[in-house]
Amino acid sequence: MKPPIYVYYQLDNFYQNHRRLVQSFVLAPNYCCSFLTFECALMKNSTATAVPSHASETKTCEPEATTSDNQPIVPCGLIAWSLFNDTYRFSRNNTSLEINKKDIAWRSERTRKFSSEVYPKNFQSGNLIGGAKLDETKPLSEQEDFIVWMRTAALPTFRKLYGRIETDLEANDQITVLIQNNYNTYSFSGKKKLVISTASWIGGKNDFLGKMYMAVVETSLWLAIIFTLLYLLKPRPLGDPTYLSWNRNRAAVGES
Image 1 (spheres, rainbow, N blue to C red):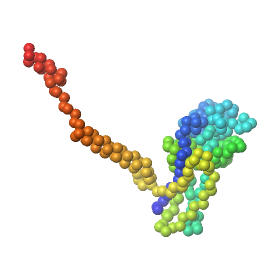
Image 2: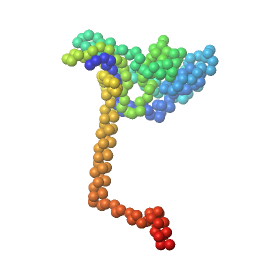
Image 3: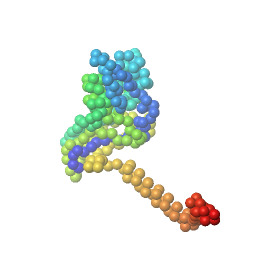
Image 4: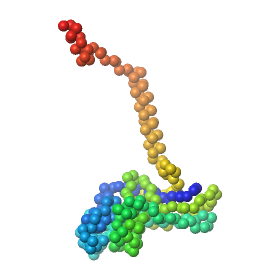
């Protein structure tokens, strides 16, 4: 396998596009930038703080809006709270393989949707921890695992980019993966998978499109067979052209 070799994690039966999750966000005009997948909002003034100054500004993020002492959570909301936190370490023939996690998020999201002035605060500080924690010394625009996770998936089975292996993997190489199993999928009867793939000029492998095309072809074939049999067994009689409006008018003129 030639680099770049993409490492994905896949979740099954996880409805990240559920209405309750998608609605759990904040979009305040003095927030500098929303920390969900929404466009940046400019700060009202340059001296405003980069985090909500009042807990009420995160009320749309319930139940992950504020701490027990009514302090705002940054980033707030259920999507952020459920951040994937399994980790993977690769080695080849007992030699460590580096996973490059830089630029795994879209550039537009790093520069426009997540502010370089917003830092995590009070995140995952409650009694119930949903997923990974964030580095409070780094702005959200630099925490790319978080940015990738916040791009909500449309289907319950989805893959998200974990990183890239930028070294050739040869045939007969022994690849060992050390997985730190942190993310709880038992509560929603889900599954976790680790996917290693390459990409060509038309993109990565996607079974969904092939299956969809085959389903359309099979459906069209069966419909064609059914309509052919109906035509042969019970053909539709042809209409009488004399009832057409222009033929009736012509007949009326001939009679007169």
